[in-house]
Length: 422
View 1 (cartoon, one colour):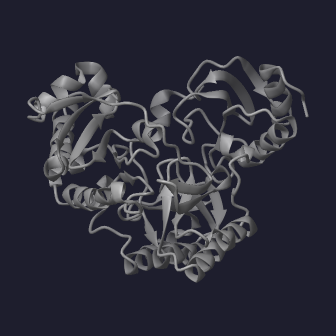
View 2: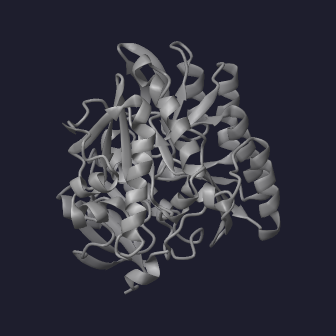
């Protein structure tokens, strides 16, 4: 059993803080205000082809990362990314700029102000030296209502604009929020972040906002941020959802979303889709939670984009069972992984397709469970080349079955669900 302290790295890679993995060095490239221009996306693909191993990940926090870089080539990758504006001034500011933006921001009248909020929030974060004390995984989200549930699980502070006001939600208290005028929303969010830093400085067990809210309650957090007099509102679950396929707002087609199988594509595949986007007069590609790539474009231009995505091997149908499975890179790409997680995940997806069963599945190469924080119907956790099975839990839950070979995953899943073996 691996100790929890050995699994907690406490930091995340970025463009200026690469991470060594089993297949070389990894550079994570954060988008600006939730989007990559086509030139930026092309630069990422080219850097992957020239200096990496041609494999690109889309993380569960909506960032692209280049894999398999030789140590001698890291500076060249950073230079190529800097040329297109994807590198921050310092490693400290690069680390703190963790802002997830609703992929429809700016695509509709209702979400246009989210674009401005994102730009203001990123500027405020990188200009405030005190906030470099925030944990590496601490993040913000600009939520227009299309990925509300996911945003609240991935971010510590969520801003939800509506009209001339913005509701601000802290992780750990997702049903309650303060509401402030649009003009003061960013300063309010920054004040909450400062309050977190103040409390966490002397409490090593407080690593994320949910820890602080659990410890002291959201009201005390708001008070520490001098927001105790702001209006309180109840947050309701959004009826909107974002998945693979055409995205509509007010009956108008505004974008199309594709999935990356288990969060992975190749540089060549990405370039192929970029060229189709160029031909369709698309200006940018937007990474989204759920390992989706959203392409905003007018109605009638989806067919060539869909054809390009199909050729690239991306997920183009909402019924594709690969969307139900989260899988980390596994071995040999990750030095902590002990199994080929993506091959094993593909076998489970094929079985799910053949049997029409649709559980949520997490295939993790180690106990850390990077690919999915929340519970799944079935979670397979690799240990020393075999798998343990957790039913309705996470990678950190107590397993029901232990010591499964990769060849036994389908039968174990079928037994757990009471379904056919395929």
